[in-house]
Amino acid sequence: ILADIRINSLYYIEDYYQSTIEALMQEDYDVYIFGDEKVSKAGEHALSIYPDKKVIAINSNYEEKRNNVYEINYDQNELGYVAGYLAMMQNSKDAVGFMYDNNNELAFESQYGFIQGAKDYNNKAQIVSLYVQEDQANFYKSYNYANHIFEYSDVIFTDSILNINGLLEATNEENSRKLIGANKDFYNISIDDNGEEYSSVIKASVYRNDSVGILDGLRKLNNDDFSCNFKYNFENGGLSIINNSLTDEESSKVNEVIDNLKNKVNGNELLIICEEV
Image (cartoon, rainbow, N blue to C red):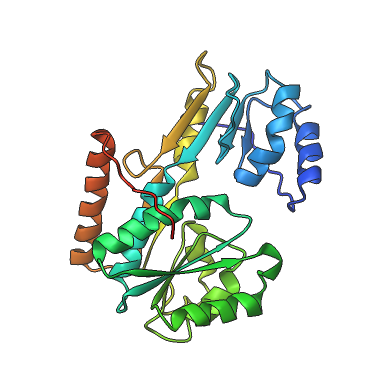
């Protein structure tokens, strides 16, 4: 696919996002890509102003469906389930950490799957959940919060870039500590200032592969049925695993878990039982 691409990177201020997106959509581009849930939310008003402009929106979950929007959403239960399973696999303790912030609905949605995945690997699993407000997400607080969780668990799962620097520092203080993320950029962030990889940080992680959905949307660009609200998962490649150093036996176990997820989804079986925690 050949394209003339223009990238706009914006610091998140919702009103500023809205006005900037509306200004950009005045220009003559074939398609606009809303790259995450914040942009998709801020750009929803522009969709009503420009109903003929085609948009690929990631993590949108719009209530109103529009003919000009290709929505890319993810099965958060599957993502959380595999993350929980991976976390317990790399953990020598019965407790595992789950850290999220108040500005990340995706992390909140994945917690039930995370609990089930952890318990399916170890039925004694307990979840140490820590909620971080966005205005508290600085280096020292995330570092201290992480060290608190590491008193109970060897592994922390987070779906938040806000907490990452303090988390990385705390994780790297002991070789037994591991971090699991839900974003492929977590691996890139795990490189220190000297270009060296943090020795103990990321053994295996899960991530959302946005490029799969974007390419699907671009392939449909000239179709009459461009509109779509598709949920991506492990089966269709929208979710995947970063495997830095799992053994062959561990990789085989994880692949078996993912195959079982596919079978459950295809069979319309209940994947996750949501419960209050």
